[in-house]
Image (tube, rainbow, N blue to C red):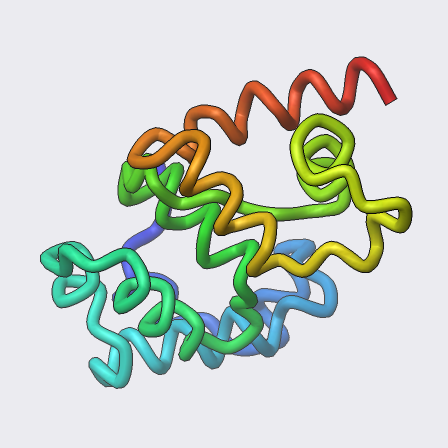
Amino acid sequence: MFPTIKEMSKLSVADFRQLGCGFRDKRLYKTTQMILSNEVGLDKIIKMDNTEEIRNELLKLDGVGEKVADCIMLFALKRRDAFPIDVWVRRVMNTLYIHNEDETKVSKKDIQNEANKLFGDISGVAQQYLFYWARENF
């Protein structure tokens, strides 16, 4: 069972390090404090309807970038319109749909727009299939 925020608030940076969190120890500590102080309200996030607003709220958490925010939305909040983008997803989206000669030049915004156009409200589900296909075929 995953610990509650109250249980996590009792841990120091050193405790997180001892648990094997490595360099994430400081970020976990700070994020715990941000949630505990309601600087970022998880209850508020859960009730939000707008994916972009949810993403922006999650991005306030220390160490959370766009991909992690999208993963949280897709897997924890069941927001099927969230489309996490990593190197594999960039590669497969470019190969199958965008066709830029240099895949590293394809922006996340372009990939997100293409995913929204192609898959709409189930972009996150499509992302999982695309990710699996890319890992098996590249």
